[in-house]
Amino acid sequence: MTEDEFRAFVNESQWQFASTMPSIPHEYTLRKRAANDERFASAVQFIRSNGYDQRFYSKTFVYFNVDDKQYWTMGAAVSETILINRATLTP
Image (cartoon, rainbow, N blue to C red; front, side, top):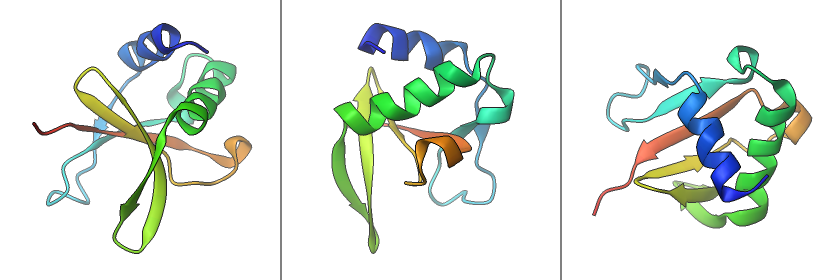
């Protein structure tokens, strides 16, 4: 997957506000809602292959920034990953 393909994937995905964490505003998209499971898995792998490590409290996740958003997963194996998170980057 290229960055343009990743951008197309996230633009076509359905995003849901994470209402259980209103103090940390972000959205997520679910694998089960993806139009194509292979593209979802490719997007997860793209984040992990092209992203950077960043700590969130006591854990470290791999993040990837594109346009004004930051994307990350929770670190499960690609085959077991069920969601991709995103948040708006602050200047």
